[in-house]
Length: 152
Image (tube, rainbow, N blue to C red; front, side, top):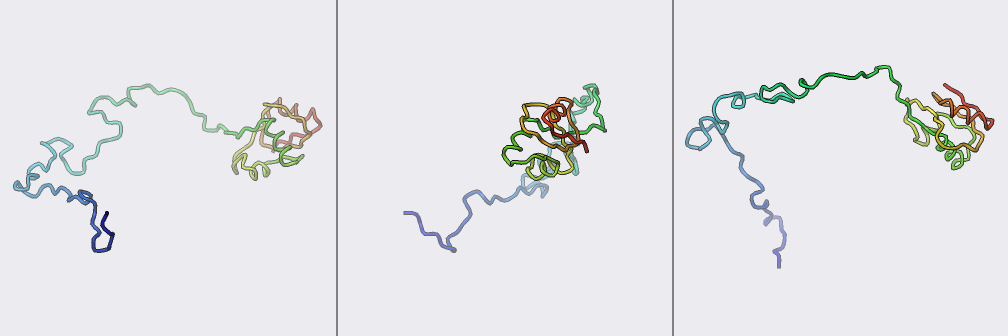
């Protein structure tokens, strides 16, 4: 049977509290002299830290590869919503007007995230939709059923 646990019998697990290696305290310790760092060179110096991507003096990969491409700083990243999603919102919440506030409330989009309505899926309910942008096919599908597509 295991011994009963009492405050005076508590001990750390064997080998869990190990003494740290004290280097540079003389030859008698076995860790004097070079203090386990080998001989000379950058790695033996105090304060040494290798740069990210350093390859021992060889030209690093990020400098060997050519630069290419272009990132448009003015690109607007829309949260896209298809007509099928609008139809399911209209059926599920029984609404005929869908605007940005409803998207935020239903967590379909984050605040300050522009919303664009795309023409994927089928719309069978007349809806008044307000969004930041519409694709041409989405606008036609909404207006064909007598609804309105308002761009903010």
